[in-house]
Length: 137
Image (cartoon, rainbow, N blue to C red; front, top):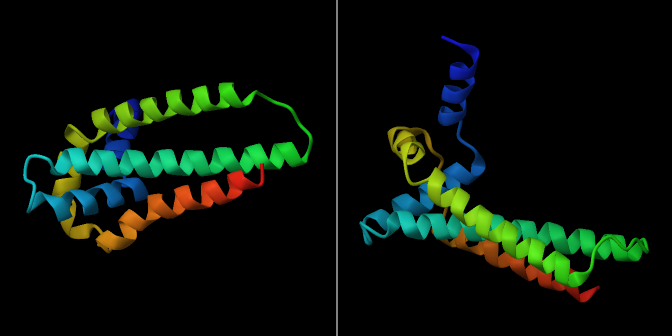
């Protein structure tokens, strides 16, 4: 087996925290919304990742403004955030639409289960913290 094939297969079979969250959402909604479960799970994981990027962006914006560092304008930062959000959604749409979801289904008995309320609270709390941090700007 070649080295690149080993790393490719290892990357397919390694589960990240986002993979676990995705599969928990997917499993919860699969019983009720059979065809739409994947769309809901992709929307959730994209929203979570975008909210975390927003939180980091707000933190660094406030931190750099307190340090009196002028790196980029507000309009350029928002444009960069929108482009990053679109790329995150399409990355998740491609990633969780094919082989990776089938691998996650095969590993379903090894995945830790989380409360659906806690999972939906994560992006909401992240956006809330971002807004609070943004008030300091």
